[in-house]
Image (cartoon, rainbow, N blue to C red; front, side):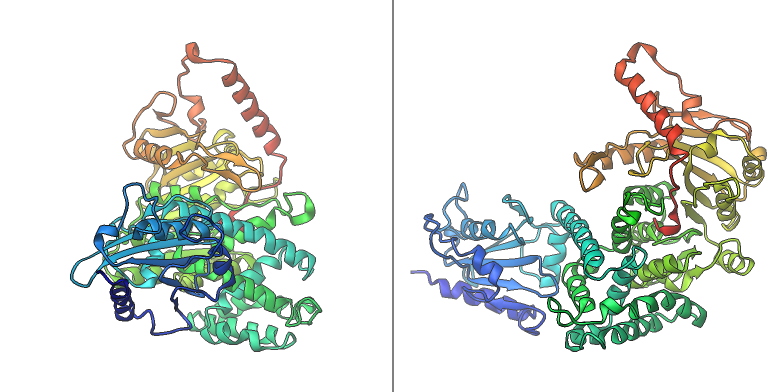
Length: 621
């Protein structure tokens, strides 16, 4: 008769070979029980008898403190004929059925990786599944490259495979935003932090947690001593980044105000180790695991954007919002960036454009040396605000990229401009500060500065208020004398929701005169990105239609196609309107009441939007 212990020994041998037992502090392997209360509670009624009144446990439960939202379960059966039933509905008798039965009891709190094993060392069968947190439907576990996982692999590789499951990633991003909301309330109500201080606490703490000594020992420091340890750890990590001295001072100065904040350094009845200790603990548990996996997500920007919703108590506050992630990704696709490009953003903010570009560039790299070159040499940014510079540089340091090429100061400063031009970037991206008064610099002045900073023939992309494309000014003349207007795309009216400003994307070829080129410009009507508004989440891709829409838009632009109602080619000059609406033909036979309502709504937003506070990438993309 088959012996299940032999199968368990088979699994145990695989775990030892893959170093699951090498560091008990990093990986916790438990057998048929768990000391983790939430797991015990979840399995307390998971008996495979179907009566739901007694506890049930798989053969192995594997967790890691560094990834607290995931758990691995392993269920064994002695004979391969009992690997999986036809309907996966017999948990007592079959390995697959049993491990998925246990997984469903844990998914309210965890993303569960389920491993079913049956047989002996000579003949065995393995199956791997992931059940995303908050669901009960398992999916086959595949690697980030899309290959099915069919044999046991290291825990980090298992977690990476699960993390890149689309449903898991969506849920984790949702959880992160939810946590940002909770962190805002904690910082406001308990720590009495000002709005501008909150993102600095988050960014500084994430940097400090990158110091292994701080991460392991911060909890042993008294409340009054922790702020000094916190600031010293930040300086230690930044110093390792090998920034020039001036940049080191610029980088750390904004954090010193947090260091001396009186509410963060005193113990209270509820928090005897102090509020800073509680903040560090929460970020270590909730955010650091996310950071180590998703390089393409602007974590600092996500927190900053969430905090901005409450600034001044009116939902607008400073009048600035972050460039949505799907727009920063769209820029990288329009530019078609690769490992050979250099990308510049002279209003870098939290670095959203640079991060999205970095991710796409790395996808084209084939060696670690190429990845290192991208991170160190091919991302250049400028940010004027000291606080925003600290946030942007933090974002880059957390990814080990581009930090030495991020300059603090005005993009019009002669020394900074000269330093930027030395990089000979061939791709520029910008969401400039939007002018609120006539005294403010015009948005196209920033665009011109960005294009002037690129190598001749480079691609420059900007998202600006649509008035820049419809109201003639001297800036259009200046641009077209030196650069070619390749395309203008009209964007959705609510792309920067909740701030009401209508925008368009402009694409230029730098250093090639439009007037001499005599080239037609591509105009796109990209008004519907298929995102919808969801309470507490803003605009989201609820129906998962954005990818197809985005790819169609990009293909139309790259191929300079003419599509009725979506794209048109037109030769324009500085005195013409630079919007698709001026040149597309309308098929009036297809118009109905909803079309008129939409036009009126767009016009209302356009009219009112000019009086609403500005959108600015100076606080990050």
